[in-house]
Image (cartoon, rainbow over all chains, first blue to last red):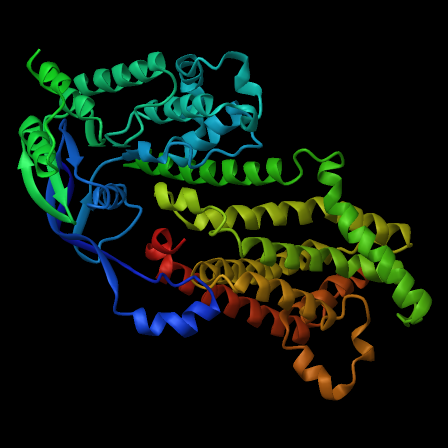
Length: 255
Length: 261
């Protein structure tokens, strides 16, 4: 069995700038003229995610991080090049995407669990554990539209982290709920990492990047600028923007 | 390997099941009448058509009572029109899901289709109740005629659903066109009037509409236990084309769904 779970070979991805689907008027008036205009999201990106690795993808807004994750999750296809996915990938970026406000928490756990790749039996077997982790108590049988946004995040996160995926994709979602719950989420991911979970991680929270990841990829305008040690790359990323890395990040990495 | 394919099958079934359950739970949630709405809607229209076409226009449906005549065609039409109109939104409405989770996209359309199919099947006892109440007897031929009609109309609705759901991602005008189109087609389909009043010079064109043959088929099957093979054959051909075109368009374009939704 191959140890490379996700592999990008010279991947380029562009999006049309005036997306079709804006209606007849735009199509007739605008589409033809702008047809050649493309937004180049990624250019010639090659990377491989090996079993047990945690890779951070860093870069400014619009540098192609989310496109990278969407390709790794198999949601979109590359325009050029090849993306090979050889594992069960769970996108934690899907936090709440499948939650329906009129269904109860319990019904949503089942719906989301299955959407993210579990069978109903597997969801049932994990339900108590998901329920406990979410700390939602009796609210689990209330319609989700009565939830606060923090409660909603708890529910979604609890489902997503009970999937036991081979590769977990995390897009800026660890800071959910209150401080205690955010720490609990972090601990859960750290534990899964210790147990050998492979992870692709996007966050602007340098502290968690340094604590969780053992390799980093630095993207700028869709190209891989550098790849390697997270601390060195984070430092370079900050310097490129005329900033210095926050002192606490240094402390976390050295201590 | 068998264990793996069993799980895959179980997963496909579960995915469809939870999505259909979601649709069923959500459609009439927070309404007092709940499921009864799927009966109230066609019955309310039946009442209005009865007043307008029977009392005002005095339409002639031979020895078939007009109420029964309506009921035999309206529920099948309701399935067609609800199915096609709601599935036009099936992909656009599931946008957040499609852009974030890589589940097989066909389930987004399939679940809505199954939802409307279930509603139609649940309404069937009511239709049969009317048939018996007006003194008609069950026919042995129902055993194969009703599944045949279900199959043809199912293929027609599913094909159009796949087609419209996909094209609506690229051209949102389609939502309006489809709802206008189904309303126009309703008046061009012999649901509230018998096909016998259509002048000959229109008949050929009218019968190219697959719902023409299906509406006559449902009515003939329910009342007399027979169908007109030629008329239903045209409908079946239309349904086959619809499914082939719908599936082709859907699977050709599905890789781009997450980018355009």
